[in-house]
Each structure stands twice: as structure tokens, then as C-alpha cells.
Length: 375
Image (cartoon, rainbow, N blue to C red; front, side):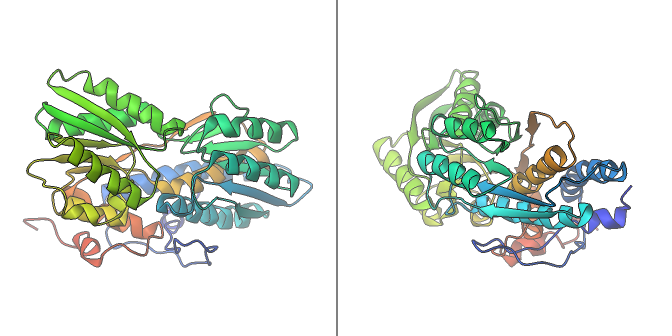
């Protein structure tokens, strides 16, 4: 069993960038609050099974190298850069633990394009990848390529956005319908159960986003005094998302709330001056550094944070368990969201820094170091 001291050393400070992460030194934060301990121990408890299995004498594969071709949705979305950082951290740790050279082969396109993803799956297989790990921009466009890869002997795992009708062996991510319900539930609370709501929904072809919209609509139906004015799709860049919010607000001036199934519009500071928190409420998924100002200023009361670092870290762990250790893994592996508000903003900021985000404002990190009121 790994001692607690070793467990605490598994929180890293790698750099989230488009270049391969360099080796980094482990840190132990000054204050391990309930939030940070819970997230880390969830990650580490799963890792214990790998070490235990390794002690059982599992024979290594003939080829002592495991190449994982990682294809996220786009390199312009910071959540996927975070997932890459987690994947590379897991690869370093598990390479050392099992004496196998685990390589993360980053093949993510610059912008969302299911057809390009399908092409990159085929390229990865042709160039000798051992496994493909993908977040699907368009399940219909990548399912055939996933099935072809599996038929050619290359296993495929999905994360964040699934292709459930494909031959992938496992999925790791949130329950998207539940996520939509959480967004709408918090928004209804902020709006006192009445008013007109718009849904910001990103890529119309992304299966995970369609399910989140479904969850929003299901939850909204529980509130007879809430009406949905429409679901609005857009290119998944901060600028396009923010522009869509402004456009819709102008077209429907009586909108009182936004249910955002992705955090794109809040990755830019544009809306800080365009939204009146007294008149309009916003609840969104994701809680990355650029979004935290919206919580601080009260424009967004709650963000549902996805531990996106774990998309990569946990997926690589499952792949190693399945491919290298020859163990069965669950088909569906749920990721729980974190409720982020002004009350735990400092804790969440410290978590983001630990996952490699270098743009976390220092004022939020200082919140985590301040003693509680009355201490």
C-alpha cells in the first residue's frame, strides 16, 4: 500500500501549454481542505489498484512501450490542455511504477472537426499507436474510424464526449444529462423559480452537449414559471460564444437567465461589462481561471467545475490497467462535478494551480491561505 506521504506527492505543478510538459517537482499545499483532499484521494485511491496488481507479478507485454494517441476536441480550449497535462503526468508516474515507456502522442486538431478527428484516428493506427484516447466532437463522424481501429487491433477509449455506439472499451466523464439538470437547478434557485432562460450550447453535433441540453430542458420542466426562449449553438471559441450571448440578449431583451452547458463565453472578460447581475443570472459548467472573476464579481453565483486534469490522468490509468496489466475496467467511469462559488473559490483556485494552470490570479490563491472567520 502507498503511504499517505507518497499519496500527497501526487499533486503536481506542471505547465498547461501546447508543448509537452516538462518533468516537475511535487508539492504539498499548505492547507489540504476537504475539497482538495477529496479530489486527490479519489484520484489516488484508484491508483492503488494498479500498484497492487503490479505486485501480483503481471507479465509485461512483449513491447515495453505504450503509445497512447490522444485526440481531444481542440487545442484552443484550455480544458483540453489541462487534460493533456494530466495524461502526461500519469504517463510519467505509471512508466516509473511499471517499467514501461508510456508516451502521450498528442494529435488534437486546432479547432473542432469530427472529420479531422476521424482522419487522425486512422493516422495514429497507421503510424503504430497502441491505444487511441479521444473526446468526440461528432460521434457520428468518428464512430466508423473508432470501429476500424478496434478491428485492426488498436483499442479505443473515450473521455468527456462519448461515442456510445462504437466499439470503444470505456468512457470517462460526467453524466451529461445529470450535469444539465444541475445547471438548471442552480439557475432556477438563483431566479427564484421564475423567468425566461436561454441555453448556450456550443457545437450542435457534440453528443455530450446535446445530452446536457436535454438535462437542462428536463429540469426546467419542473418549474412552471420558467420558460426556455431557445437553445443557441455557436463555434466553440470564447469570442464566438460571448458574441452569441450578446446577440441573443439584444434579440430577447427579457431574458433573465443563461444556462451554459459549457464555459466558453466566460473564458473571455468581455461579458464582465455587458451583463447586469441584478437583472440576469448565469450558471455554467467549467470553472477555469478566466471564469473565476465572474464568481468574484457576483455575475455567476455558481460554476460546476469539471476536474479536467483527471480526464487525462484517470483515462491513462484505466488504459494502463486494461492494456498493460490485462485487467477488466468498467465501461462507464463517472466523473463528479465540483460546486464552485464564492465560499470555496480559494480552495478551487489552489486545486487549479496544482493541476498545472499558471494563470490563476494570486488574489484567489491567497484566499485559500486566509484563516476562517473567528480563528
